[in-house]
Image (cartoon, rainbow, N blue to C red):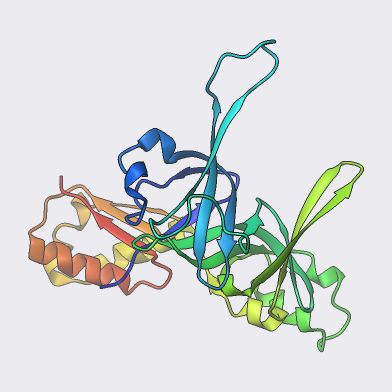
Length: 259
């Protein structure tokens, strides 16, 4: 069975209630599992994750101009300690990501296994200004030209050392990778939702048993997660459709619903 993946966007709202490995004390507590993902703590060697969520103002404070934010940090599976382990790296939204060959882009999030709650990769946006910094074809950063501006999924095990740099305007967070620019360039492309949706519709239409239902099916895609609804299919047809969808490059999860 193919394991579904979930993309977590740092700095965005997250819904973690679909993670099957959550500790018992958290299951069913939707308010505790939804909020803005301020940072994550990652152990690169094991993929263990702790998420830091905030849900905005939750208590009355004085003066009214002061805002109190309810922030909570919790593990994504029951075998982890309640608080991040000492070897966990804290990752922030839009961290500057640096390979052995130099700056390659910014961190946008992570990908986790929905069954185990462990990381399966980092999501980075490759920098767009490579033409301004590459001086020769032999420059290792030249390997990134074909993927500049794209979102790539790379190994979480490459994350080695975060660093916070303070300056006059605030702080900047950096993440160093134990990887070269060519290794980063070989990452999996996170496809645009519309392109992936088009290919999912196309592969469903190619199945003679499903073609008659295509006009009644509604396919939505978000960060590689495909959801199909609109018509009640038999268990056999539903399984056949899900199997077909998994063959589309870039699909990270599949969920189907009846009418």
